[in-house]
View 1 (tube, rainbow, N blue to C red):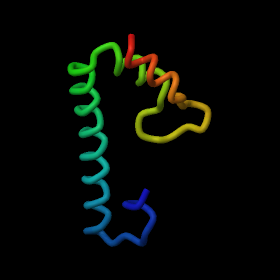
View 2: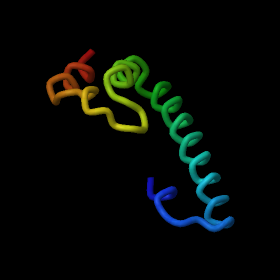
View 3: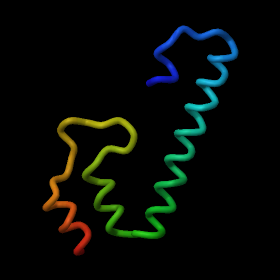
View 4: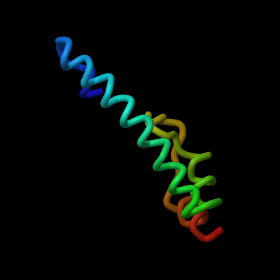
Length: 71
């Protein structure tokens, strides 16, 4: 949001596009790594919590997080 909420000249626009791509690809690669490391625990977490943009109706409680860790 910080990348796109200001006046942009051409250089800033190109930087914002590249940074957005970098963050999106990086987030996907990080998720793959976490799936390899934590397998089903992280998959259960992913099903309950949104990826990049928070959604007010999609969250887990501390008890749910503990249950996921214990599975």
